[in-house]
Amino acid sequence: MPDIKPLTEAEFDRLEVLLTAPNFDEKAMPLDAMQGLLCAILSGPQVIPADVWLPFVLGGTPRYESDAQADEVEGLLLRLHDSLEEELRSEDGLSLIVYPTEEGGDEFDYTTWCLGYLEGVDLSDPHWTECGEEEEVSELLLPFLGLSGAFDEDPDLRAEVGFAPGEEEKFIAHWRENLVDCVIDAHDYWAEERLKPDTFKREAPKVGRNDPCPCGSGRKYKQCHGADA
Image 1 (cartoon, rainbow, N blue to C red):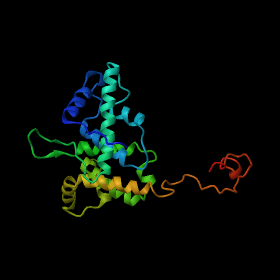
Image 2: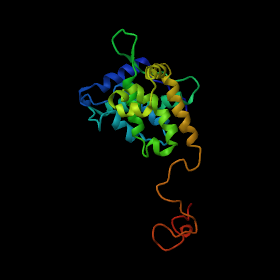
Image 3: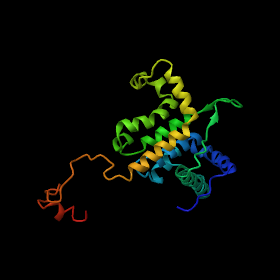
Image 4: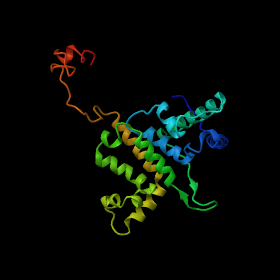
């Protein structure tokens, strides 16, 4: 992939203005959640095409005001996607888009970013937990669940994690400080998994070349649908 020029601050501002235009009906994702979602789909077990994630981040099929608006919005979003892909692969880390919880405050809102990330995880089909070792994948997702507020909404999940007294607050603080590392860890995990044969779990037993073809033709698999395998 050729070098992709990251969006400038002015282009981020322009994208934000475009996505809050009346024709989007306030359904487009905010930039922080959008970056979280894109990082997840770029890190996961399979490629998610633009025709899947674009309508999702735009809140459905958009009613563009003009072809020019469509070209500008989608051009900026595709560049954001491609530049994030380069950032995740580089050794320079990731520049997070997070906003203060209060104007001028020192606390930052990681909840919205992580909710976007988890929505990106859910776009994967099959799901992450079906494509890797469940325990390892659960550990990778734990920081994003913790920072998204999932433990407050689901006491059973908190109980399942089994924090010791006073431990949860320490983990939350650690994940906030190291969110970029958590994102990179997930990206690197799936990059390695994609290099392994038979990464995805099979829903049916593997068919041998001399076995009857599952299509029911009565011919051997190697002489039927397995001829090109």
